[in-house]
Length: 448
Ligand SMILES: Nc1nc2c(ncn2[C@@H]2O[C@H](COP(=O)(O)OP(=O)(O)OP(=O)(O)O)[C@@H](O)[C@H]2O)c(=O)[nH]1
Ligand SMILES: [Mg+2]
Image 1 (cartoon, helix red, strand yellow):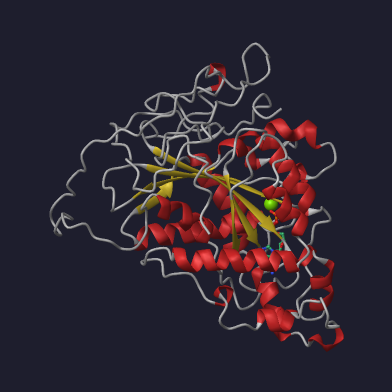
Image 2 (cartoon, rainbow, N blue to C red):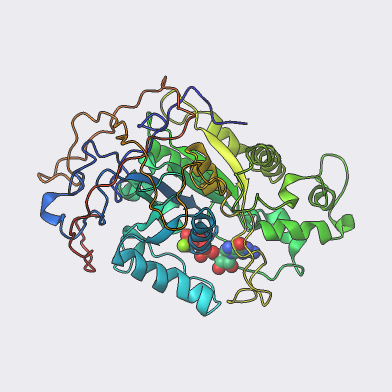
């Protein structure tokens, strides 16, 4: 099932515009030296990474209840993203020093070096809230030699998405409205029936108390009546679901309307039993469509009907929320205590939500070597210069406003716009220019 075609969630109409890495909003002037959404007084501390001008930006915002697996997903998906890019003949690097420091300290070292888990992401109001800074990666692609692509992830604390006093924190999450994808994780272990069945089979681990339906409702309320970023609804910790095929269900299965989980999860024909397409092969859209249908039905069996219904009935405005379902497992096996499994980290289907976006633009979609790709000693021929089409954003304003007025209204989208299915016209590079190093000092003004 494809995303609805009557909604264009991409302001660039199928192209990849230059966005502000902090607010995710499209920059009207892609050649600007600073984000127009950052208060000029603080632009030195919130700079655009080197080479940002006329680049193409792809943005991902994480969402989900506490302990649904968001931070571990980011830790793993960054490693996988690098492999995907390199397998496809591209290059991958941290776009700035801030990203390197945060990724290495908060994600890579604890998980991949110490083989431990990650602490809960601190709420944005706390002084150690590292997720205020996005993780930005600079990519190049062999399909589009010389073009600069930046991929941006923003982690979120489940604590900030909980129901209690959500309106007070809502403004901090405005970037959801402009993300290319909101990756929403749904933890099956939070379903009491599943947790009960797996007791004794899967080592117990953290499960948040928050209702994922309420958390999703909060995310949708941030989107308001107009903005409809596409939502990748992921059944997370899928390794735990796979254990259900081994659980003797005599004690749990009473027949009738009850789901026989052992039978469901033992179905060897199901897409969720197979791995994704190899990294040097095109993203398998057919398998992804099947998986989408299977996971919708699994979510329904897990009692997540209200959650699914919310996406089909607009909370505000008149448009439903375009979403597609995925299954992901960052660890590949349940952790043992506060450490990852002794068998190691074996991610399952984690890159699917990212590859699905790339495939839309023909990026990193199989090790395709263009006919004019240079021989070993030649230099890559440049594609004709094509400047990305920029969406008109009337009334662009700094955020936060200098005069303390309320933030600017969302730029108007065009619900009737058809997304373009062809490759994007990625932008040509500009000569590199010096940027001040990203400031380490935290500024309270930015996220109140
Ligand atoms: N079995 C399994 N457990 C996982 C997986 N990913 C995360 N977990 C478990 O879920 C816990 C929470 O993971 P995090 O990534 O820290 O969750 P989070 O969504 O970032 O949580 P907050 O930061 O509090 O919002 C981990 O400590 C693990 O116990 C997975 O792929 N498989
Ligand atoms: Mg976290």
